[in-house]
Every structure is written in structure tokens, then in C-alpha cells.
Image (cartoon, rainbow, N blue to C red; front, side):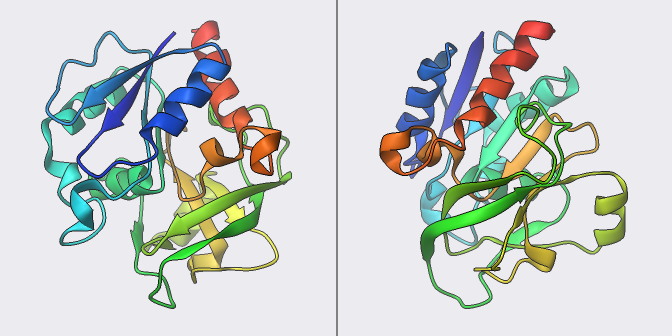
Length: 220
């Protein structure tokens, strides 16, 4: 079960994701920004960080790198793709998930633990949770406020993955902080499941995101 971890200049959560993938029994592999040949992979994760220093806007430059052509190829092959934080911004930039993640309502870097509600369990990443289960994971972003012009369609298609519970720390539309494409195989979330995958970190609620990938691959 080979899972690629995409690296851009400025990525800083790649090692965390790599570590958790090994914990759940995957064979992680670092993939640099200039590589297109991803066909040998079973899934891909685009980790958090500040790709290219968030120059212009978060994810804008990473979105036009060669590796994203490879990611689009994996999507066409119906393989799971997960974007976390900066990875979510990149997936939105290339149009693989609906909507955008833009500057926080209060324009400041926001780093804190949050409670979240799991709104769909039809993705590989959330399949091991219960619908509407409350989980705890941290956020760390300055451009995480979600917005879409097609909110009704998003709900009708069951494409809302995570929703802030009890508070909305960045002003996201209806507290939405994770979405997927119509297939459910491409998922973009602003909270960091890799930072909540071991009890010693303060929560292990996020590890099911990674276990879900392994379970999905094993069934295919």
C-alpha cells in the first residue's frame, strides 16, 4: 500500500504525515513537486505547510507545479487524494474540490484545538467514523475560511466532510472546514488529523483518517 506524501518548498507537515502512515501500516513515499509519474501509488496526501511561502495566496504556486498533473492523473484513476491545510488550499486552487479557502475573517494566523463534527462517512478518510461524531483536532492557518457559491449543491451532494462544532474560529461559511469532490475520493480538510493521531499529542481522533485510507485500498 504505497501512499505518496507530496513535498513542496515550504512544506512542514510532511514528516508528520509520513510518520502516521507508517503507524497504520502503509508504505509512505516522499514525492517532490517536479515529479509527474505517480501511477505506482495507491493514494496521495498533500500535507500542510506554506508551499512557496504562500506567495500570491496560499496554494497558488503549488497548484501549477508538475506534480499536480500527476495528482490529477490519480484522480482520473479513482485513487484517494487527501489535502490537509495547505494541501486543502492547493486542491481548491486546482479545482479538484469545490469552493475556496481564503483569508480568515479575523486576518491573523489561528492555531488552536477545535471540536469538529463529521458530516459524511462516504469518503475513505472518514469511513471509520460515525456520522455526526464529534472529534477533536487542531487547526493552524491564516487562510482557512471556507466559501462557495454553491452551498445548497454541496449539502445536497453530501460533500461537506467536516464542520466546526460549538465555535467557528475562522468565519467559514456555515462552519464548513472540510469538503470532498462528488466521488468522495478527493478530500480537503483544514484541521490537522496527523497532529491528532496519538494520545501523547492530546488526541488520537485523527488517526482514523489514515486507517480509512488503508482499509479502502485493501478492499480495492
